[in-house]
Amino acid sequence: MSTLFTSIANRLQNVFNLEVIGDQIARGLINLVVALITFAVFYCLWKIVDVPLYASFKKSKLDKTSASFLRTLVRYAILTFGAIQALNAVGINMAAIVTSLGLVGLTVGFAARDALSNLISGLLIFWDRPFVIDDLVEINGLYGRVETITLRSTRIVTVDGRMLAVPNSVVINSTVISYTNFPQLRLDIDVTVAVHENLERVRQILLSLVDDRSIFTDTPPAKVVVTALNDYNVALQLQVWLRNERTHIPERFALREKVFTALTAAGIDMPFETIQLTPLAVQLQSEI
Image (cartoon, rainbow, N blue to C red; front, side, top):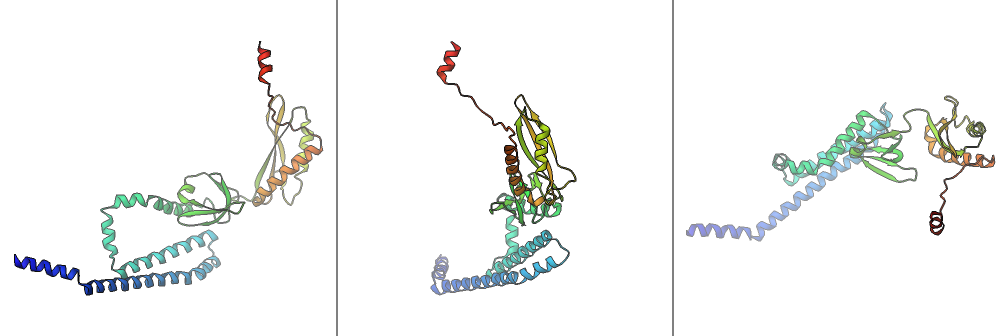
């Protein structure tokens, strides 16, 4: 029994031995500094090779999207390897961590589900190529120019200068409208005129606004079609093809203004929806 108490006393003495604790703290701090230096070395390595590597990608036959994607892969590879080496310097066994993940795989898998989904979606976007960098796209009602495609998100610059980071999992599961996959894009302008107006006269006025061949093409030719009509109004649509598909937003605004100005100057009646309000007293009196 005395031997047992002696052993316990010795263990407690070792626990509260300041020299032992000091040595452990010192070793821990040294390992931490080594780990930070190790990761810093790999971070600096990435910074050193990033710009020339990306420049070499751009000079090769790779397109801008492929060059950007490979640049991202190299960055993640270097930083991930650096993080593993830093953990090893601290004394953390990555093999043991991977083995232990099998016990908590369900929890980790649930927590990393979104990240993994975005990663896989990023690879699918790169493989399928529904759009590339600098394309004008619309995703879930968000319109803008594709700035970059990373493994996590697709970044879009809107017409008002905002940067939107759309998760790749959202992109891959959404309807993507590309405005730059084809060299020409049709611009549609809707107009409503009164039913008594001469449609041929209105048609000639509208077509005269799109005869600038530096902006609009004549193949296919511009046309004005009737899209709807009722007892009071006729709905028309001016359809014209743009020579440069990237100008469709400013040209849409400009053409709408030209249409309104031209039809107003020509005296064309463009009725607006009106609502007639009857005072309650008058309505009740008419019902009696």
